[in-house]
Image (cartoon, rainbow, N blue to C red; front, side, top):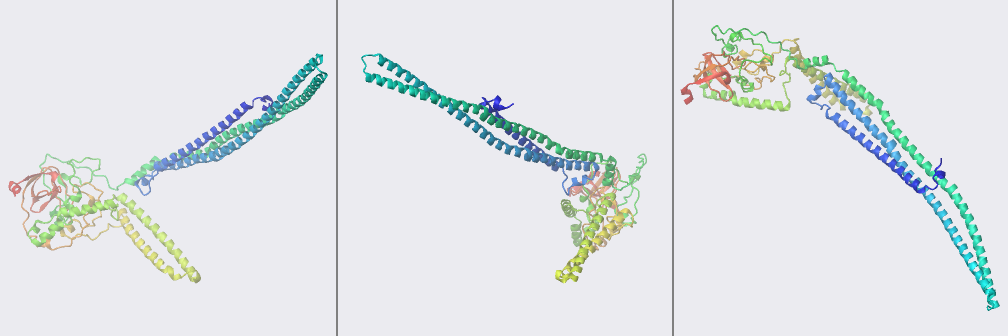
Length: 607
């Protein structure tokens, strides 16, 4: 089966067919190229997707990835990144093994095809030239034969005519012989040309054309084989990455199987456990008995007494209620930052109102708007800067213990790094001492001294945080600090450290707040003004009020009231949400304005 023998007369069709084969090959190259672009685009999108859901460094999201479920998700993201890498490998291999190779092969194929068909056209032109020569020789032979025949007829006519001279007859005879000779020569030439053409034609159709067509057939078969091999390579490139993709999927499955719901539940406990005990039972309040007024355990009179607490109205439990237990009270009073307890020295004694100098000093130092503005500004800056108390006393006990332990571990690692650096410098110094040409031993003394100081500072920090940690864990007695405020009222009400218990972080209504008590932020120097005005008369009453709800005053400057209790108003609400009231000559303080119904005297309103 050879194109040379079977398709000897299909030169034009073979030319079209081979051009079509090259077009098919170029089309396949374009297909593979677009496939590689799709793989690259898919890999890029997978990488972007994985990057989009990766936790940001030093953010809250990074802390959330300590749970097994989120760690499994993170492992899935990492495996998807590797998965995308395999698609990039597919694209690279297809580009190098298929696209680049076939593109180079197509150029070679075009050159080879051009050469073969050029030889074919040349052979056809040669045989056509031979045919034209044969046709010319044939026509010339035919013409000479006709001319010889006419010359013979003319001679015979002249020879038969008696009126023609003998010379004319001889001339006609010679002319006839010449024509006959020319016809014989043309015949011989025609015969020779015919034999030559037949030989050329035989060689053309049985030698030259078959050889050329055979080469074209081989070229076309190589093209077919090559495109088949490329298709096989196309599949092999995908097959080579299947094991790695399978490993990625296996790792995702392994990560999914590592999810432990029990462990995650335990981590939630560790993350949010406060360390507080649940509240005790709420005592029954018998409203059939006459209400008895009870003295607030944090009132000014108790503060000046022995400082012992007494039961609240109706023997209500002091234990904090859970956040999901609703309290029978109106909306909470203004934030603790605006309460009288936030004022460094609490509400001032009315006896300080009559000395001009002391009055101006205490009015400046205890003015609620000024102090509250300063403290609100300071707290706002702290929140913006992410700052908090150094001992983490703003956190519940369990969370505080974890933070302190992390701080201790961090400091110990820093100490170890500094010690390693010091050991390395010490060895370098020994080398310099033994080999002075390598360096000056005294050049590292300054750095060694700095490292020693850093280590000592870090050890002091460790001791400090370990002390706080021991306090939280109960290994050491509670730390007692010298109070920053020195007023007699404050010392009587707060004999222990200001940060030793969670009560310092309770708002005036007794609810827990995460914000650290700010009572110690300002230092007020001790003055003798309190003693100078002990004998002054109290502030006059400007009206009465009725307690709408029970309020347990637990902060300095506040007073406890019972629902329905009638009291005297001595200072109207100044816009901060607090009203100053009095129960008797020795008991007065602030309560939330929303907790009482105020009836001001007409004279007080007019004034």
